[in-house]
Length: 397
Image 1 (spheres, rainbow, N blue to C red):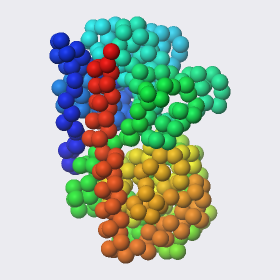
Image 2 (image 1 turned 180 degrees about the vertical axis):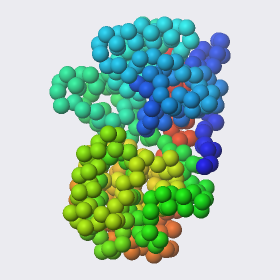
Image 3 (image 1 turned 90 degrees about the horizontal axis):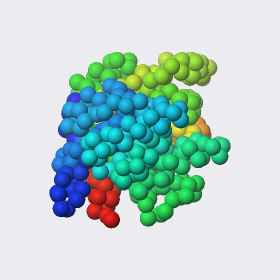
Image 4 (image 1 turned 135 degrees about the horizontal axis):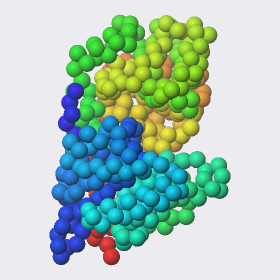
């Protein structure tokens, strides 16, 4: 698999023009296990290193630490995955000591519990504090809203989509001058249809037992109810063609009961032989290439819409639910389709539309979709914009 990246060449500014010392940026998050938050952390760390700065990441550790260190960043293991008040206070002291020892210039928090520790440490040591707002979070109670508000207290607050930016403005007290919308970025070099070999496609197709010539409708995403798997299964049952295969890509993470529900639904609709629940996939570019239609059917709004961006970069036809970040990653009728959340009939109609496209129409759509992602949602663009936020703070009073 091609591991080339599209890192930016932005130069990291010095902390102090008098000393010209390269900037030291520390990102903090609960752990480095897997997920979009973790991936964004590694991407930005790599950009800091490439720009000549020093990248530190503090977390409780995990399997991605090794990859982080290969990028040239350093990891410091702290119990930042703990949420108890005494743990937050303890982490505040640990982070303050680390800031002083490592001469950290900017502390960048990416999750709520670590952010409470990081804010106290940054204020105690006089360092700039940045947060990234990765989701809408849950604020059903006043206490929860207060807890979430830490993510709006940065000297700069990064929202990962216009949808999240609007959510912050509507629900939290924030100086608009401190808010920056920086969409999440994907690696458009790794997610490039030209890089996927026939051998990779054949290996996945064989492992997933995909029939030759059968159209594939794919929903990538962990097995969680709000991801809309049942809507997709029902839509596949409704489509005009009777040979369409539904592939659900993502682990159940212990939700075996939910997986059994989906299997029972497919059985009740008579499409058990056309359902594949394949678990996690280590070669998502090849997975997308096997799909005729990629679906994001989330019933709750996606904060950004990584699946739609990745699939579009691979030139795939995408159908997503009409809310949240998907409204930004898809241009309806131009690069994909939007349908009401939970509406299996509308989703089936959109799938039928895609399957009826001519070969030329598919190629044209795919080219437009990839160009759109390259222009707006590349990893290079995200990293350059984030380094610019750091530069604002380092150059400011």
